[in-house]
Length: 486
Length: 34
Image (cartoon, rainbow over all chains, first blue to last red; front, side, top):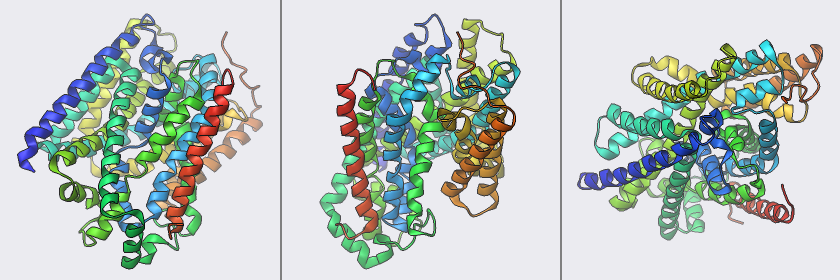
C-alpha cells in the first residue's frame, strides 16, 4: 500500500485543486447581489435541479454510509440495507411534498436560514428574536458536535491514506473546507458537493461491480443463510428495534431529517424560483438509490471474512483486500468526499446560525452589508477552527454526551416550528415551547433510556408537536402568516 | 422473491421510489409549475 502513497497524494492534490477552483468560481455569486447576505447564506437562490439534488443527497449521506453502515450490515445482516435505504424515499418525499412549500414561504418571508424562517412565521419583535435565537443556539450546540465527529472521521481516514499524523490529516481537510466555504458560501458547498457526489456514485458502482461479479445476489443470500439465517431473515429489526417492523420507523425519521434539519432544509431555500422540484426528485431518487447499495460490502465481507475482529473493519479491510490499490485509493478519496460533503454543510449551517441568526436576535438593527458578509466568513473560519480544536482537546465525555443528543434531538426540537407549522401555524410561544420540549424529551430519552436513536427523536417529535399546538392555543394562536413582511 | 424479507422490501421500495418519482416528474412536466 505504501508504494501507492504518491498516487494517493496525486489524487488528493487533483481533488483539492478542483474543490478550491469551484470555491473561487462561486465567490463571484456571493458579491452578485451587492454583498446581500442571501448570496452567502442561500447561494443567491441560484441552484439548478442537478446541483441542488446533488447537494441534498451528498449532505444526507455522510461517511456513515461508507464506513458505519457496512459494519452494521456485517453484524446484523440484510436489515441494515433496508434501514439505510429508507433515506432514499425519505429525501424524495421531502423534495416532492415539502420543498416547494418551504421555498416559496421562505422567499415571501425573506428568510435566509431555517431559524429565521421559524421566527418570521411565528412572531415579530422581541418574541421573534427569542425564537430565532433559541433555534440558532440549539443548531450551533448540536451540529457543532456532529461537525467535530466528521472532522475526526475525515482526519483519521486522511491520515491513514496519506501517511500523516491524525491531527495533520484533520487540519488539512478542515483547512480546504474552510477556504472554499469562506470564498463561496452555500454555492461553493453545493458545487463541491455535486463534484463529490459524482465521485461517491462512481465508488458505489465500483464496489457493486466487484461484489456482484464475485458473488451474484442469490449466491450472496445463500451463503449468508448458511452462516446464520438471522442475517437474511431476521426475526427482529435489531439494531433498529425489537419488533420486525421497527426498521420501517427509519422512514418517518429520515423524512424529518431531510425536511426539518437546518443543514438539509436550507437547501430548499437555495433553488432558483423557476426550478421544478419534480425534476429535482428525478435526480435525487437514482442518486440516493445508488448510494444505498454501498452497505452490501458488509454482507459480502461477512461471507468472505466471517472472523473480523471488529465489524467496523468491514470496509477498510475490504478496500485493502478486494480492490486494486489504485481503485482502493480512489474509493477512499470518495469516502473522504462523503464525510467532507456533510462536514462543509454542517460548518456553513453552524456559521450561519451564529453570524446571521444569533446576530439578528441580539443586534437586530445592525445591517451594514459588507460588515455582515465579513462576519459570515469569519464565523466559517472560527467554527471550522473550533471544530478542529474540539476534536483535538475537548473532553471526550463532553463530546460523547452532546454527540448522543445529535441531529435527532435537533429535529425533535424544530419539528413544530418548521414542519407542523406548514399545516397548522401556531405562535411564538408555541414555537419556543415546541423547541424546548422536543429538545428535553428527545435528549432525555437518548441519554437516560434505551429508546434508541430512531424511537427517541420520534417520541420527541410527538411531544414537541403537542406542546407547539397546545401552548399556541393556550396563549392565543396568531393568524397564519400574520407577520408576513411587506 | 430473493428469499429474504428485508431484501425483498429493499427491492420493492427501490422500485416504488423510482416509479413514483418518474410519475411525479411526468406530471410536473405537464404543468407550468409544480
